[in-house]
Length: 221
Image (tube, rainbow, N blue to C red):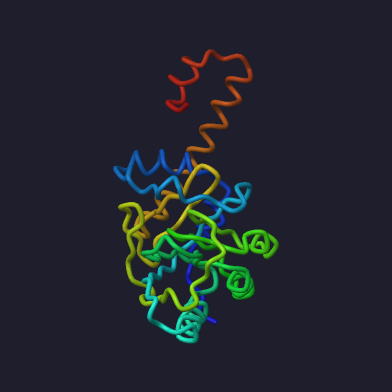
């Protein structure tokens, strides 16, 4: 079983943070446009998701037979590495690009989660599997005879953000962001420092310090 590398457990560390702090950090580094569209929402908003990305894309094709579509779909499931967050650009907004059996497969393989710029079905059953899924809409229509995955591990674009295999996703109730792989160590360390500073500001406010004074002392609010 192929596993994607996550040195220093950046995924686990970022899941202990929140997207607002990640955005603030990216903005301070000159990377303010790494947010994915706000229409991409989690099935379970209580569980954040972070980890190294494995990308794939596909296309609508109503001429292909059901066997071929399912064969190519299951090949995608086979390629998805353990430890990854699978990110899909389906180039389609008419059907579901994730369902229960696929979610069960990902959970068994140790995939951290799934995000697609498309649809989802079997949502109640997916919640029961525990797979963390982000998508744009729900529909009972599946890929059979209608859609084929075709590119694996190649860059995709979602909402103007270029996403490469090896980049990191951080997503929670407030939204999803992509962290370029070359910045993951710096971003993670800075986000953790932001949280430590925010805790100091919070303590100061609860002790009665004026918010202006707290801001001027810690330069964070």
